[in-house]
Amino acid sequence: MRDITNKHIVVVGAARSGLAVALLLNSKGATVFVTDHSTISEQTKAKLNNQEIPFEENGHTRQAHNGDFLVLSPGVPSDAPLVQQYRKADKDIFSEIEIASRFNNSPLVAVTGSNGKTTVANWLDHTWTIAERNHFTAGNIGSAFSDNVHESSSDCDGLLEVSSFQLDHIETFKAHISLLLNITPDHLDRYQNDFSKYAASKFRITENQTSDDWFIYNYDDSTVAAHAQSLKKKRMRLNCWHFHSVGNPTNRTVLSSETRTSC
Image (cartoon, rainbow, N blue to C red; front, side):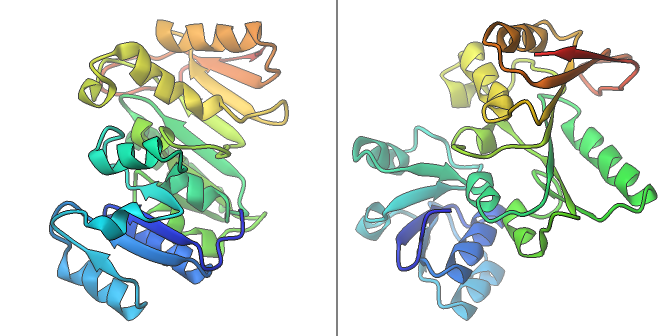
C-alpha cells in the first residue's frame, strides 16, 4: 500500500463496509473523513467518534470533495455526483476491497456471480471449518474484508464473496483462487442498462491473476465461458477449472464435475 500517513482520504457511505475501511485507514495513520448521503446510525456515529474520525450525514459538503482519493462503499453508484467530481479531478477512486487487499496477508479465495455466490461462500466456509483450516469469511457476506485484515496471515485463508460493485473500483486486488459462477441480467441500472458493462465488471475478478493463480468458472454459462476463452486468446496463463451446473441455474449453482484447462 502507498504511504497513507496523513493522507486525507474520503470514505463515501457509512454502512458496514464504509465504517470498516474508515477504521482500517485511520489505524494506518490516514486522516479520514466519512460522508454519507443518508442518515448515519447512532451506533456507527459512536464508533467514529470513539476513533475521532469526523463525519457528515444527509449530504456531501465541500469537505467531501477535498480528499487525496476516494473510497466507495458498495452501495454508492459510480455515477454519483461526488464520484464524478473525483473522476473529473483525475483523483483515484477505490473500492473497500481494494483498500483492504493492500493490507491483507492471507491467500484469498473470491467468489462472484449474479446468483448463488452467497450459497457457495457459505459452502466454502463450511468446508474450511470441517477441514479445520484457519480462515475468515468476509466481503459481501458476514463482516467486511477491512474488518479482517488485522488478523490476516499466510496460514489463514480469506474466503470472500464479492459483488460487481466491489469489483468496479479495484486496481491491484487479486485472489489466489477466483470463482465465477454465472452472469445473468441484474443491477443493470448501475451499468447504463448495458449487460456487457455489467459482465465486464464481473470479469475483473481475473484481472490481476497470474500463472500462480486459479480461475474456476461455469462452463455452462456462455458469457462466462466466452470470458475464459478470451483469457486463452490473450495468453493469460491461468490455471483454470470449469464446472457444470445442475438444477435451476438462476437460483443456485452446484459443482457437479470439473475439468482442468489452461487459460
